[in-house]
Amino acid sequence: MNVAIVVAGGQSIRFGATRPKQFLELKRTPIIIHTLRQFEQSSQIDQIVVVLPVAEVPAFQALLDKFAVRKVSRTVGGGQTRAHSVRNGLAVIESAAVVAVHDAVRPLVSVDEIDRVVAVAAETGAAILAAPVSDTIKEVADERILRTVTRAKLRRALTPQAFHFQILQRAYEELTETEASGIDVTDDSFLVERLGVAVNYVEGHARNIKITTPEDLLMAEALLS
Image: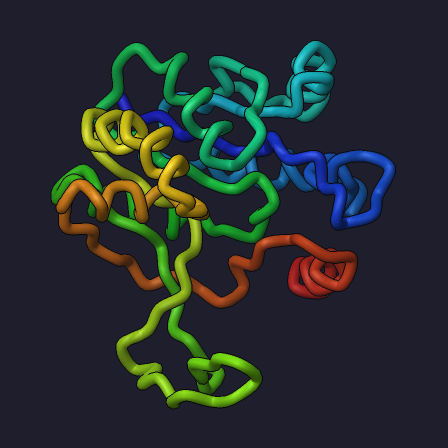
């Protein structure tokens, strides 16, 4: 059995909306529902755990019923950071072959992307979706350019990121110690890499954007059109 953790625990303070952005509507449907529908259609995903702001948990089942989302097996409250929210989601999974972690505010992920990254993770132990870097990248310090980074070897990390269940559990056992050393954990692969586990990447599409600003929401609407 493969399980997806859809991370929707953020409060979206920077977005400036009155509700967390994952509940804002995109083409008259909440962003989070667009995302869940993709996992609902994935042949590689059997169950979904959704991590939500604590205040949103009680009413969420009604939203799932309204949009006929059936694979969600658990909803849990989020933590102070994305990593804490993922850890909360992991804690309610009793067993799984592969766990795929995805940001709820990436509603344009395709079913094919989900299926491919989970299949590679099942075979190898760890895989993430990634996209090429199209801009020229500069390393800077003190308002000066230090060097130009060769972008051919660079990739943007996307989600989902998928791992054997035991590998991801081991990685998150190190979260408290990692954060105590002052390191900001921004994705799951980072923790897995620190275990010394090889992480494969699967080519993803640039349209798999993360909605973090009102401009991103407009872009997502255009892409859906």
